[in-house]
Length: 350
Image 1 (cartoon, rainbow, N blue to C red):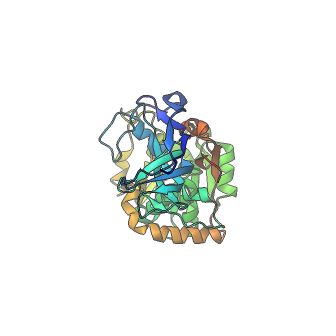
Image 2 (cartoon, rainbow, N blue to C red):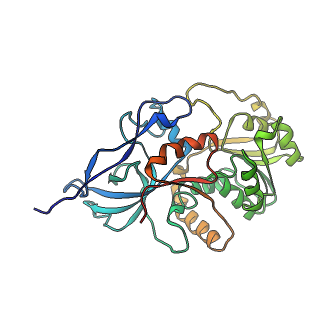
Image 3 (tube, one colour):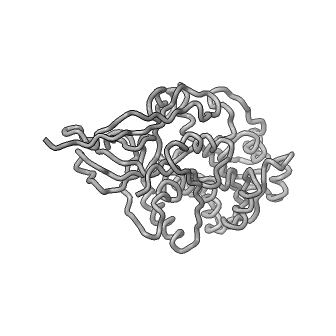
């Protein structure tokens, strides 16, 4: 019999369900569990070594005891999971061979046993010396695709239109703004620090940007940047920013509802929208969306955005945390805006 190597498998577990904004103490880095570095025969599974993990705001929704969403909740006491990049170590699935790098939903742990029949949004990564591997979680991953699908499919942009993006330096917003500029739009973004505002104007090429924390009146801030009104609002935050945007939309404006990161709680209606009436006389269209609805255009997205990146027409910023121990803090930091750019955790060095 061949000898199977058994190694420790450090993992991040959810301790208990969370209603509001998660804290580091809602999770725990658990050591002591072991795993065989072998895919069991007849299991149709494959074993991966996790290299990078993506921290994304939607994961908060999976931390509550709520079963009516598009993704089931995590289980207390069990590892959490999310998008990651991993290398195949061993496989009992003919579609995956050792050495391949895959992207998809994986465990927040050092090694994961995956089954491709589970809804893991798996894809193989074509390695490219010109593109950092971790970018397949951000620019070329779920966040980048959310920006691309949301901007082109939901916002239906036209050249010369005015575009407003909230959380504009984040994983999604930074790409929305750059795509809008490449499309010939006038683009303004909001963010939560002077450093992020500087990035929007000087690195991402936005026409204007403001720190929402320094504005007493968001309606007045939007009127300052969009005296003629807004054609497209790409909304990542909801709440009072969405309310202010509703006062400033042009006739037949479009609002893409991508995220509501400002909400303190996802289960109680902590904040109503007061200005929705404006959508009627202005004939504004508000539409929520999930990137997974548009997988048919993923190849087109990859081709376009890779090309833009290689031609230097798009830049992308990551915030990298080193080591699985820092993963809970990295995830929690999203909800207070600690991250600058796309938040990624490096689990292992290749």
